[in-house]
Image (tube, rainbow, N blue to C red; front, side, top):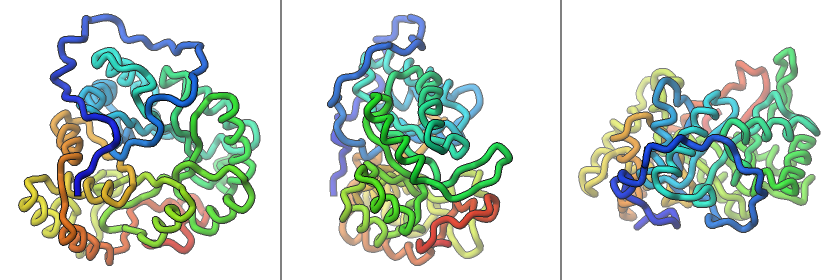
Length: 334
């Protein structure tokens, strides 16, 4: 099973001499983009920016682009879009690429739900990223947060407002994230505009195969966040009895046979299911390692062994209790 993103990987070393020390252009152009652009579908391998913080956020994003990533996943809630935007600009400058050579996703946060707030939210995101448009704009959660931080399930009026962003050329596509089956079915029943993509937690310990099949049936693409499972320290310790995914006996065994690393095996498995994956790191060597997953080839027997890990049904991200709303109804790991 050979995996590609549909865009040619580019070696970072090929770009090193193209940087002439010029200032990074941060001001967005006022030109409205012409559709369609170069990338007509979301690349399977992306670079995530959740929890990127500190002094080298921009450098990490720039290095990802120089390494060959063409899909950058952002969100207003991550609190780092200005730094990510500087990294995008620097990556474009150093590679000689154009804006339309990248696929850039961001997300609407809960405090900007409603019939008018998404417009101001995406304007702020575009300004912070130094862009004139996004390729994909997700509703981050089916949850609206009031000024008093009270959370309620709400998505239909907000979705209608997001549809209008398409006609204003603010984004090429709109999508959802963290929806349950009843919520997504309700959205499909009440809107003629279905989501382009759905971003959700997916990894060998939370495989959600039936849920993926629903999306394929309805022509909705899927992006897997946390594709390396609970490797992010935000999630805390693994539950007792569950091996950390990157130390998994199964993944380590497959990695040794295929000449890959466990992380590359997990990412290749995710892309092999047809989902885009968005690992993140601030370490150049790990950024490059994750990009190497494009060359990690798995066999049918490997996939079967990884499928057996799905019995864990373990979900690392579930803020239902903290937010006092019911999320992920009918899904694994609840």
